[in-house]
Amino acid sequence: MKPATAQLLRQAEAHASRREWPQARATLETALAGEPHNAAVLLQLSYIESLSGRYRAARDHALRANAAKPTDADTIRELMSRLRTFNEAGALHDLLARLGPMRDVPIPLLIAAAAQLSYLNEQDAALRYLDEAMRGDPRYPPTLLARGQVLTYLGRFDEAAKDLEACIARAPEIAQAHWFLSRLRKQTPASHHVDRLGKMLASGAQRRPDDVALLAYALHKELDDLGDHAGAWRALVHACNAKRATLDYRPAQTHALMDKLIAMPVQANATRVGDSPRTPIFIVGMHRSGTTLLEQLLDGHPDVRGVGELYDFTSRMRYATDHHCRGPIDATIVDRASQADFDEVGAGYLAGMEWRLGDEHFFTDKLPSNFLNIGFICRALPQAKILHMVRDPVETCFSNLRELFSDANPYSYDPLELADYYKQYERLMAHWRSAYPDRIMDVDYAELTRDTETVMRRVSAFCGLEFAPRMLDIGERERGVATASAVQVREGVVARETPKWAPYAEPLAPMIRALQG
Image (cartoon, rainbow, N blue to C red; front, side, top):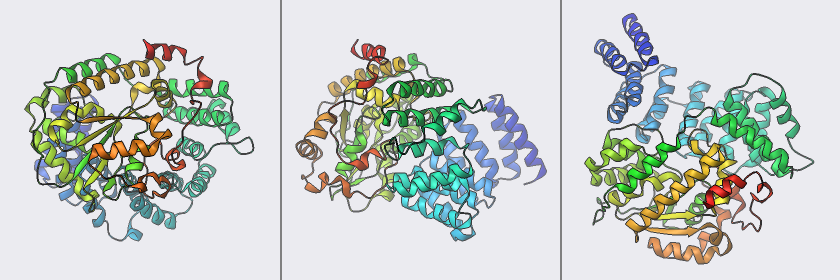
């Protein structure tokens, strides 16, 4: 990199730190004029365009950075992340191929590659990179942590526990390792980590709020397993407070977004989009409502490919409206959607899905928050089937409250904010059912767990599938499950007689009243 370019990059970073996006963009464009194929400059421009909300320009700069074929490890690592941000799986795979033999790739790049493959739910491929990293240094904590995570998604829990314990032995300060470990099995009086977690939280050590949340969620899980519900509730409050303090969530914005979605004109394309023989099955609802279980059941059908939680439809809407937002949707996308080419949205979505699929005619897209996108899905993909998971509100909300979703669900760390969000979700789903009565099928979680075959026969008929008994053999699934239910779904179909929230009914009373109001 030329010295002048490096100086301009520093100036652009200073502008960006003050949120001076036009000045940062102009400075980087000056740098690019001097070095038009400098991938580092192109990546910084991509970030600036994303922060400015300009999705297409941000994507284009990332693709140009990839075309420049950088060789610097730090630039390659950033480029991997950017390509995955835009769901440019083909470009990401090309970049990985350019790295050459895995044995020649530095360990940090192997870990970065595995992370992006895991985000794409390519868990077996991610594990190959991590296995190579382990051969290079079998005691490196970041490798052990990442490998434990991927092994969890693959259902190889004993191996995952071994790696996570090894990570903790080498680097006990890595809070995420404690959190993953707590989730792998039900703790028993003879085998648990409560004392270790309690001491870490009480040590007075300076920890980031996110790390406090990870440790407190782990402690909540283990105390709940042991039946210490009073202690588990205190740990849960600690965890939620720590995480909520890091987030700028405003319920009024959720209300306004729902209002905009409900006010949209009801429109749907009349014919199948494009020449694709594929039929998407969108599985939507609140997180923790049973969407993973339903996908795993459908994945047993020989003509269905379960592909997990995807942001592909969101990516197509971002591109169509030229707006980069946080989360699956925002008010700007809704405002601009009237000018979107929905035939192009649907065709682009289907084309982007092809690399994941084999001979199956149907595939599942199991991003729960796509319930926000139902109006757009109905316009872009007339052939799509929409399965809406419905679960008891208190069960759903309590399960959300005790789950760490990082920043993805900012409403889920305060019981009353969570109840308010749930009511808004119910309001929107009532609208979608009224607007598109033939496009959406409600699937009741309790009924699904108690009479699985009957429900799956109805689901199959709605989707245009012949019922396949193999769908009921959920224990045979081998594909990775990279969701909050990664461990739970491996237990098969479980019908609970007593809900998990029952021991916490007293402290949950305000949330329950809000849900009933």
